Length: 388
Image 1 (tube, rainbow, N blue to C red):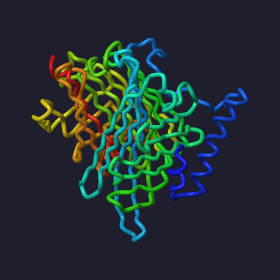
Image 2 (cartoon, rainbow, N blue to C red):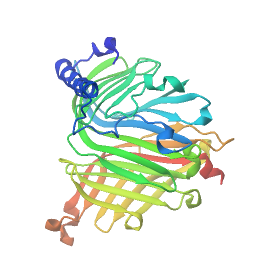
Image 3 (tube, rainbow, N blue to C red):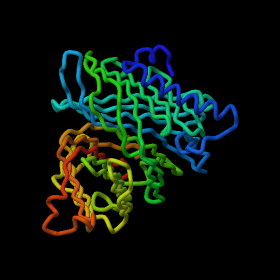
């Protein structure tokens, strides 16, 4: 951890104690050769050789919905995500590709997005990412962009934007078990999700510091692997995370090259009790129907995207829309190795309607089972997909 940065933690003793507790647990366990029963080896970093692959991407993704309050009592509602990641492959000729980006969606409909990347010698990658450990410890080599912690001790994130206008100083604590989503085709990936937790700390926006008064967070650790750059294996994906008063839905759907815009070769949806993280139901394949409407043509990217999407099963309907979208353009049509990602946050109007609870299974009460909440939604289209 950057000592100078840690001295700026506004929420003081709480975070200090928790961060110290994390390092005490992890380092003492390593030095004594004793592994905690709670240690989880899926938290740490990996190399492509760990999977017998030629190409691996790996990122840690933290998103949140928060109400912010400044010292002069100004309030602001925001949604945000932060991604810290790296890619490993012999294609990089002895280097590791490191990347980081964030998006912020404000209640005044303004958005802010920043992306940064660099390459470091492969022999030095373990200086920036803790490999094969039961905790994450990621340090971006340029600037103050770090994440460290574990599900046991909590996660500390410090993210200072390049222009220093955005500074996130956050602590995420989850008390729910992780869920796992894994696919072989069309994209081979594994995602470890800590679907719900509380966020504490502060965020600097446009030169003004806001303390988090109320916030919910979600964290996942996603690892796609392939014989080639992962966007070349698929047409694209849809990913949603919807949180309401009592429920949370996490869904992954991946389109194969042959699916085009019309279908999804892989579909998986998990419904959880938001308050305790218990999995209420899981659905996959033909159990899930996806309806996408109100398509928008993004001519500058040679893409199109739906602005509304509904995931449904016989006893569940999940509705989201893309009102506030950030475009993440990594397109490289010349080699078909890139993609364009449309990332949206929906505030207070996403819907989950669940009728699978036997106590509320009367058809006349279906409307009573609809809850509104917030949602994060990604719709990605690959270069390989649009050039086929």
